[in-house]
Image 1 (cartoon, helix red, strand yellow):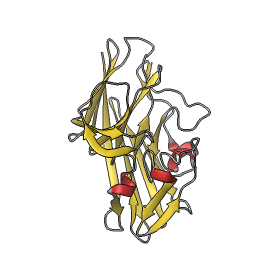
Image 2 (cartoon, rainbow, N blue to C red):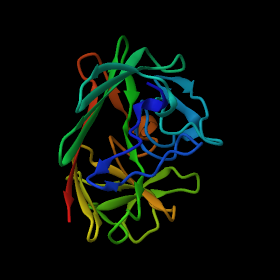
Image 3 (cartoon, rainbow, N blue to C red):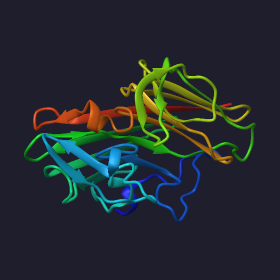
Image 4 (cartoon, rainbow, N blue to C red):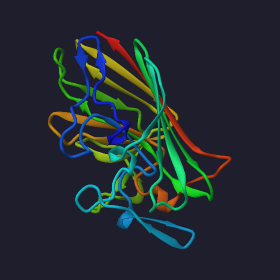
Length: 248
């Protein structure tokens, strides 16, 4: 399965909620970010005294990992469930795999990402990058809420400075601290989606006029180099999220 096994459509009754994919692979649909999420400092992973340079995939950045534009292997497929596996690339620290799972029901979408190592431990991060339309075929423009308590201050290089600040008002291209993992999207007179996840970080990107992104993630951008989560054979990195839809 090409293009990272991304979802290109999420049809809820008569409503399509995702922005279509365009020529640039980072834009459109809904894809997994792994084995790192967001931007990383100097496009490399530093671990145990060594540096692992990653391929640039958006202008000057190695961003959102390798899964979103790579071909994966479908390991399980049913009417309402899909499992896709990706191998880590040769530039990664140690051989491993990324497993995505998608399940869809009448009123919900469940998805998970799990990163595993085949050999030595390595740092990792992951998340989802859905592109939601601001306006649907009916109803009013989207309103969204992330139950954030703080925001990671963003430097001129778009990476966190290490300081937490007040969330403030948008527009946003920022990582937010969300201890309870909850968010919601409301298109008045059309649809509501409520999100629950075991992620305590969201990235909110709402600069485009036609779309916005709520991105539950295992951590903030470049955390993999600063305060990494370590994947071992006994302890893979796993995140889950459930998106419940209600027609209005």
